[in-house]
Length: 353
Ligand SMILES: Nc1ncnc2c1ncn2[C@@H]1O[C@H](COP(=O)(O)OP(=O)(O)OP(=O)(O)O)[C@@H](O)[C@H]1O
Ligand SMILES: [Mg+2]
Image (cartoon, rainbow, N blue to C red):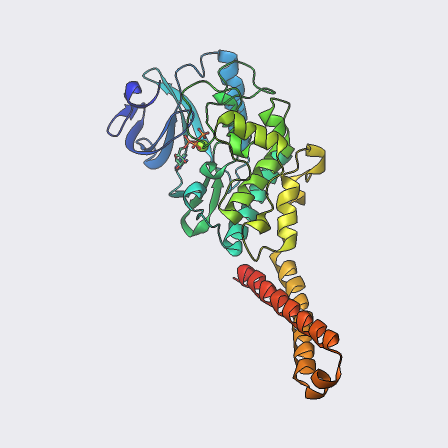
């Protein structure tokens, strides 16, 4: 057990690590801010449940995978310093990120598009680097992304999802103990990862590859943009069923001003069939400059339509002589162009930095 029963808490020690304060709780246990007394640096210590690393072989494989992600030395991936045991307690020592988890930064109505892009672009970059090295995250979600000072993005828990499984080899069948809202559930769950962000293949216990992370990344983008999760259920089972079966509601039905291409990108990540998603994080590209240019051009053309229609309707000769139906048509055209113009303005505002 972790938490109070493990005896770990502020003021206690784990080997050379002085535990300072509690940072958060997750499916595996508690995370603490600690001081490495030898190196004089702050670290984050994640205490693992007692039964997770008993099998020597399993421990070796797990350590290998967790190290592989850190070995990439990518600024967007939290470095794991070591995996150790002291006083009979297994723990992971990692880089401490001063900041907030992305989960705490998403307002209920969604984030501004510029903020989404500022975080999503480096996240996608870090993920593709890990994928290129053959490492799949498996539990990408807002609680596993830290946003540090000056908006620096760091992905947490790379390769750790495998640890959540209560039974040995979890290369294909991963397991978790999370419920639908991402809180630790009391009973042992069946599947690793967090149901709301899990790919359908992961939700059904099938083999996962990098494309599963593409799906979770899509779920994350969806929530950043709309403030809501794409798949929701009252229970873990219902959430998993929604992930596997239901098409997500179009983000544009939830927020205004979302550029069409960005919505398309999110929905492509969220395709049920991995073959229909982006096949690599490298293809998940959002180019805000190109999008801005496209919208500006469309805006110029729409503004011209508005001016043209207004000029016609302002011409007394036209209004008095043209058949009523034609005048009516022109009025409808003006209204439509004006509506389009304000929608484009809203989209441009969302993209503006
Ligand atoms: N390296 C770190 N630096 C700073 N804070 C951290 C670090 N690692 C974790 N935290 C904090 O602790 C919280 C709990 O982390 P933890 O990974 O245990 O839980 P989780 O991500 O919600 O679930 P899971 O167990 O599925 O990963 C995080 O949401 C974050 O706020
Ligand atoms: Mg985590």
